[in-house]
Length: 190
Image 1 (cartoon, one colour):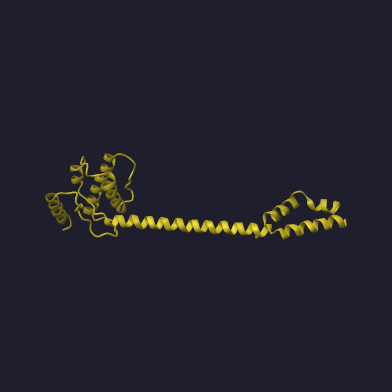
Image 2 (cartoon, rainbow, N blue to C red):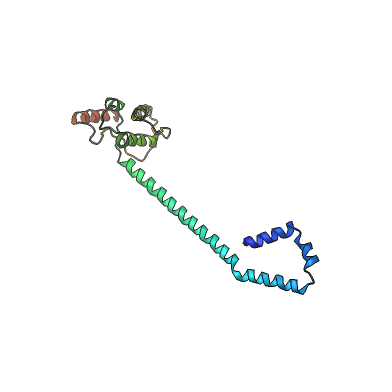
């Protein structure tokens, strides 16, 4: 119902306070009182209070809709950025490599471990990237790599939008380690 707050309150209080019987006793039949009520009602109607209230409600609804659209666009932008970053990740699926480089200062949580965990999280949403120290995250990553290989051997890897994962690790390995991992990768994908 499109009713101003003033009208709603007047109607509610009319029945709540039994205003009808009071009007019948005090105002009906008195021309001065009736004229005064009509004049007051005209002033309220001319004041534009109802129109102003409806415009404010409409403006607030439009502002909320604009904020919701901006929020949805921001969420989509962040999701697209996250997906683009995930597409760039070349997973290092060898848990022994992570164990061997556990104490390397070049392997960082933000630059290496978290992105790898996010990649694994695409395949297995139960993998959580919790707050904590490097050691905890690295242990989760090693477990995720081992679980990946177990699912691969069982043939239960879920489908995902990436090509078969590679073990090459974008400059973190020296040439000999890269060759060993590439050989292992070829062996795993035979």
